[in-house]
Length: 63
Image 1 (tube, rainbow, N blue to C red):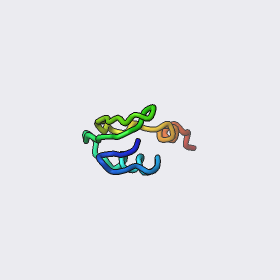
Image 2: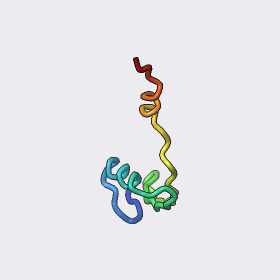
Image 3: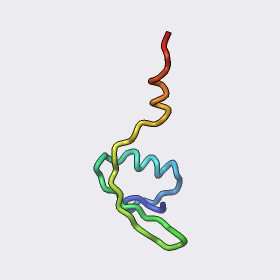
């Protein structure tokens, strides 16, 4: 990934934060390089799925 909605992406953390701040249902235009060739893709933000860590905490036995 080189940019999201025209804003440069300099790190994986920055990309994660940009996507994390986008609203569910919002379209985000991504610029990327694949085999040295520039490409663009438009993705729609979907609701986050629960992580394995979140699910693991639910099944613990409480005494």
